Amino acid sequence: TKAVSSTGLSPAGDVMTTADQSSYVPDTTGPSMSGSGSVTAFAAATGDTGFSVLADSFFDIFFTVSVDGLYAFDASVDWEGDAPPYGGVAHVTLTDETNFVDLHKVYTSAFWQGTDSLGAVIPLTAGISYRMTAEAKIDGGWDVLSTTSASADWSFTLTTVPEPTSISLFAAG
Image (tube, rainbow, N blue to C red; front, side, top):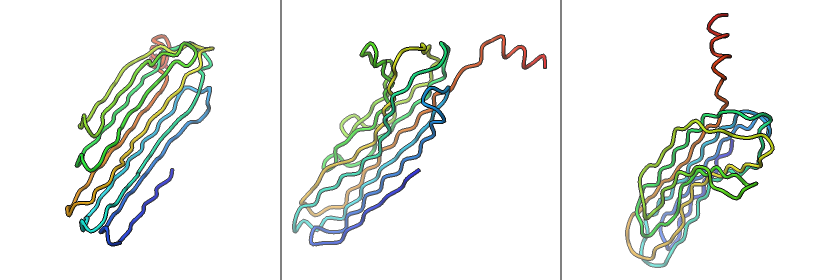
């Protein structure tokens, strides 16, 4: 878990950015992982000179699963704000690196604002190399008198789905 912020007051005006990220990966061959991240940008520009901001929260891991199975994959992203002056993206992507295929992706950006989400049960195979990436990013700048803001975030969980026989044994127990 990490949170950072940066503020500045100059002839450009008052500028502030934040970035937060939290993730949990118990084992890179294990059955579960989760993460979330967010970024914000705010500027009260004087118009006397330009400013630029960059806020980036990201997650990137390569992993394998130890056994073939079904996994619950939930992901959500959101990007909201003033574009321009800000650009950026929010995405969560699960990739099969062995076969170079994006399996699932949720995506939004400064130019395609709003929320995108996914809730799915997916098969993962032992011996395949997977990659999970997530990012929320805001960048941009302005030299006009104005007040602007933007925010972006991502979150995901990947967990094993119990086999139907395990569920019935649990219920019987």
